[in-house]
Length: 415
Image (tube, rainbow, N blue to C red; front, side, top):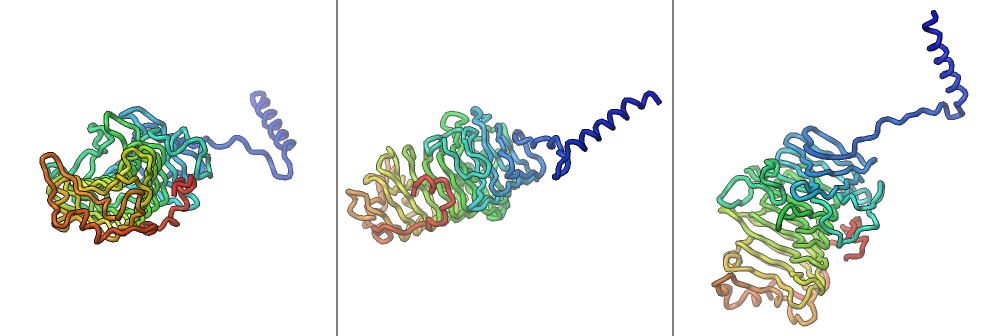
């Protein structure tokens, strides 16, 4: 019996201690469960949910692999470390994977830098501005839809991801491919470079199909483009891009979806509001831009409305442009894209331009330029003269800006 004596005394003492320390609310229960491991790194190979009760940290290249779904609850904040070059912090949704990121106007999902002082339950931090760029990578979604690729290849490696990572491949033949949902998502302060001239966009969409739902998207202060489409057919609505270091909205490789009710706002180092390239292979596809507001400024060194290049084909309609410099233009870059205009593969309608000082008519901003050794081919009337049929001066039109009251951009008075 002696060997049981000490344990019995210990048990009696524990019971006495709990009894003496109790109050009207019952005993104090301690300790808390182990904290959530909130750091994301490497590959996500099975379904995972990010909750809004902890700030998640993105460390390096994080890839959701084929067959897995990453669900992100409304109001969730993800802060990314900077990383270096090929190890830059980036979230990749690989072909065959899905992201289900459903925020709300009151509780958007926010991707930002680890340097941002935004706290749980907040929509905005206070220590970073639209000029804080390149503090991490960005978000990349890759699908199996068609893209017009050089040499008529069926797949390609997305820019910003090293060629050694096969999870960076995009392209296929399924235009209805489903990569999930992005809704009320804000992406801020990204664009880390992984090499000379190879930066990551705020949101990259590589061959994303129509089964994917993308709406209410904000990209702020990215080093490279705000949103870039590489082929694919996904439709995007209510997107706003502000103060990126290159182009706001960039289209490549015969993207054939519709971008509607969206806004491009230039910052102090931005290039084009719109940069649009055509197919890189024989596959043709036509984009539609419908209900777009372009907001420029008079201080940006480049600051153009739009550059249409490399056999661009599609429709630009219901566009409102305001705030640009007198020498800003909408340009056809060479004979190939000018020929597409003549052939009806590239069209413009219902443009309203708030005229900069020194610009007499809205159609004056539309210019045909030429490549080396070329001469203009849109003649009698010229491209500028023909633009009078679709361009008028005015102070309204484009996107419905009331759809963007939830954004960081609006909170800073950018529109």
